[in-house]
Image (tube, rainbow, N blue to C red; front, side):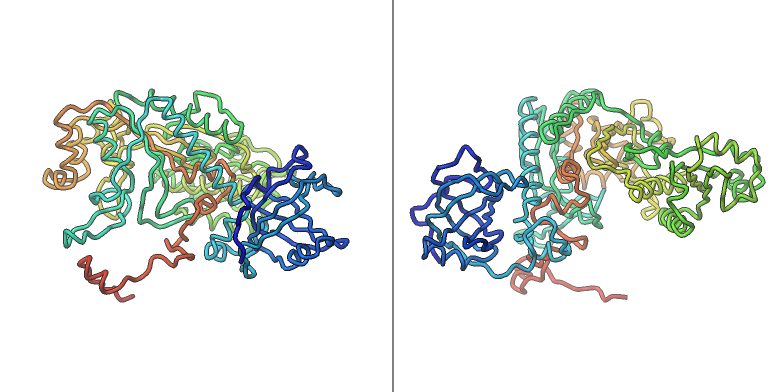
Length: 593
């Protein structure tokens, strides 16, 4: 192979324009395609900036012969003169010009790649992840990572302009008993003891507020050992923020400014401020989700009044037993779903706990329904009026416990929206969800656990409810939601030792357990702690939303699979006996039952 020698790149491939005509340039990159036409050899040369056409003339015999040896993904350097292109290619920015080569150096050859280096290759995701370094050569993938880098710069600029200090917090820390499972790291020099990789820098950033740093931010890697989905990774990047002497009304407006700055820089969009706000209860009532997608309607409607005196036993027993009857109107979908399609919708509702689903189709000739014979005419009329139904609409009803009914209907409205193409990636709806429950009951642990984390401040009016009615206690917590995705969330924190002790007690900690796990934070609170609060944004999810992709792996350079493995490096893997011995670890695998 040849070396670059005295050749130095003068331009990126995607930078050449008509203004460069007659200039001598040096380009370097990968061969996207080579073709022979009319006695000439044409090469599309690609780098991270774009593609430029290179022309090799047969009059330069040695150079021409060398060009015929080029294959896809060869790495080359070319020196030549920019000329106006005879056949213009309007699909690429450099389509008005081409480079007539005077010199060619083959810097490295390449085998035939196992995947095509083009955006519409249709290759399986498994192959893409296995050969990620090739997948990342695609222009669309590189553009997503460039967008991610630009977002990070906008974020840093914003916080620097607003008096924040970027501070790094430890990666090796103490395991915590609340939240998702920790990734554990054995200590070689302290046998039998373990660090945990941080799920977030939560406690450390609170301690920074105790220390008087006032405004902190960090773009930081976090780790959670939890089941994965399309929008989750075991290691993820968080934009982490904490502020002193603030309440909710200080944090939300400031970060509306951040979001508007990001969207304006990246997408040329600015949302009207202040952003819409919706309480957790309202979101669940109307959309069956604490991260509602507002790009379409089909809100949940309470139908208890409509069927208060119904003879239909399913409705009768539901209301008598304190359950609810709720429904959604899928506008214009009466003919969009056959009986088979409706059966699939019912199966989808059952995935979220619903025992069944009732459908009603409103047509010009009347109403069709799975329970038509059980309904009175006045009930049908009242149902259509309550749900604002007209000919062509599909009504879906669930009679069940409140949580099951709203959750299953919320998921049904999303499933219908996906199937009907109602979710445009270029339509953005943003809102804050506020007043989350302070606690939620864990059936697995048979106790109340923190909805967010144990350091969240209760609403001032609900402090006494922590003892008397924990289910009704609300938190000074908030999430930012865009298009049905939680982009960020945070809360005002407890800054008083007595209130923090009260919180630990409500969560079932003894004084000894609280001191063992969080003693350093409890002790810090003894020395004067300012009111403080913060927020954290998922950078990966934010970039997903900005780029319109539905898979978080598209915006992470080297992601893991849904089973938390790396197909490229084959991590995680076994380690040698010597390494195990040095870390004082013995591995015993459980037998599968």
